[in-house]
Length: 458
Image 1 (cartoon, helix red, strand yellow):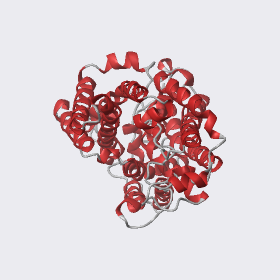
Image 2: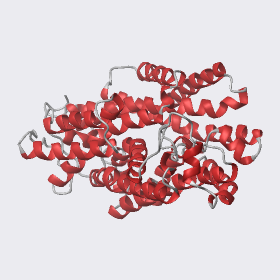
Image 3: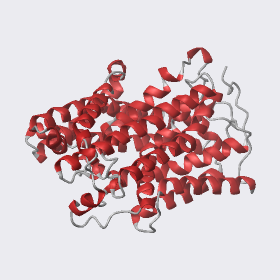
Image 4: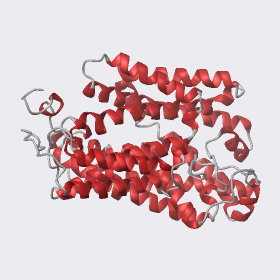
């Protein structure tokens, strides 16, 4: 403790001054756009990350695109906007701003430490997906694929600790690779979109994938997949907001970098899947799969080299996940050597990749949505109860925040562990977290705010 009241991570926090900030099109929008251009996101949009017959195309292209638009707007307005405004107003990072919702002591764990833990889950997903994209170059040898996954996670963690600045210099341009690939695949598939028939797609679905979804089910699956994918990045809107000049920057950065790019990248992937089926009649919903690409392009070599390009473009995000985790651990566990904590995290990431658990996107995104849905919901209510501003750090442990998170997490995780079949579980977890926080805050379970000198952005 630095002053007898505030922990060091709060007393030593310095707001990002307005002189260091820039327009939305120079920071927030391109950064978020890069998140959704990552092929792991758009590759499985058509399937919703689940083994369900027809995925989100089971009711046709129109319903699939409607679900994308709804999910995109939810990401912007519910999961990003309030964190972005909190970052704008305070200039302070997420782990500091979270001390209002979870307390000066609790804030170290939630959302700070949890964010670090989940980043290694993202590293595992990246390592698995990239190794699968590269596997055709090694004749899809499963041993080679696992070795690539381990090396991928280890190298990303090493660079995060030693040379992230070099990755950052080239990462700005690498999202152009998946953009070009999406455009190429879409042009190739355009001729088959008019021949797409949802009923024929359902008839071609593999056995054991069910009878398809209703229109409501399609929209709920889109929300589960997209919101689950975005939940941690939504809370990180606090950090993006610290680089915004005004409320317009926050709004435009989210509307363009989040909502619009979700619709464009996700919509392109849906149209590619539909067009490919219309052209070839072959069932396939994973649009970044080398086999799918080879079939659409009419060339095995095309699948191999496009897979290589997608993996190269994904590597910076693996480094950044490790970097965010390292910073989180440095803040929450200052006495632990970062090389040790990050090394352990990278080993877990590699294990998730080689066991293929990281490839189960429905489960991965479900856990992320269950973890951060209640956080975003509670932060929103906290913001409005304080008069649309940051209340400041609350002493000790904020019971309203912790109880709302626990209940929201249980609700969000229920479908994954067989407790209940809850449609759009990450969104429901958000709503539950928000409602319970409001009720408990009104019941007086929020501890008093502790003065934090210099907390206002200058």
